[in-house]
Image (cartoon, protein in one colour):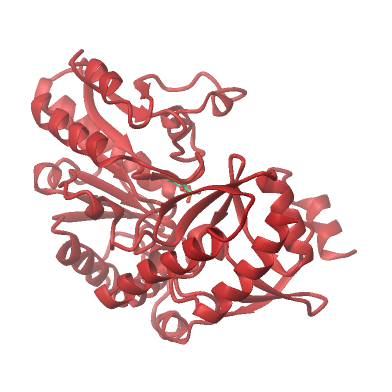
Length: 388
Ligand SMILES: *Cc1c(COP(=O)(O)O)cnc(C)c1O
């Protein structure tokens, strides 16, 4: 049986996979089982922060595998403590809860918001959370409910209550919702990834921060995709000059190993108490060692490089006559063109280029250290497809 046939026979059919069997990678390049080479502008959906076979990351992971792979959270381990210290030092947050995925990081954020409200009010009255339409927060039943897209609200009901959706960048609607006083938090992505790579406006984010102050709500950013240097700042809220209460992240954090993190500000640092939350694999030493090697290298210099590469991509796309708009920030970009994103992605695959889609757009989230030469080679193929 081929890999594809075996997978189709035995793996649950939840994914519409591309017809590609990947064997190995190096940098931003991949090879399939037949030896054909691809440039990867998707990086495993914004996960492989420094691309494939990144030796610094691989050495850190290998050294930890040889030493200690798992202990459970009954004991202390160095990589977990070091990663939490690093994240707090770089963000000003006070505590971190570790988990294994974006959905789980958001579940923690939701639990913190609800418990914060419960501790303040002594009841569940003010426990609702505002999220945005077109958002994406994960696949667990609760994070599906938090996701502001009707297509995700079927088949698996009943869904937990407690989420109301506001249109992104609609200041009037946000003010109207907040003023009801029913909410304990606003949770949003600064750049909606799955929803079409749309960035929130300064005005909207600043208003959200003000309303959180005024109505005692927590300001929560879902930085699962936009975090960890992806947009040209360590965390994307840093573009807006606001101070969140909770930040969740995952995808790029451990450079290709499963790890989620929920960072807590001073206001909520003591909301979670022994027994109130947990995760068997959370803060796993191997994943944490990988993450330390990633976060230590998300320097200002690297961020400058991300922003410079964004410009390189934008300038090249400006020469394509069929590109209608380019949205997003840093190396998280959405391209609207006259062809459907999915058609572009299929053609690109034939031509040795991997791109993602988001809604009807082409989405580019390459490794942060992709070379200019690889960007130019990828964009030559992409622009040729878009303009043909
Ligand atoms: C991918 C994503 C999630 C879900 O992450 P998983 O690791 O798949 O659970 C949540 N929020 C955002 C913004 C994402 O991009």
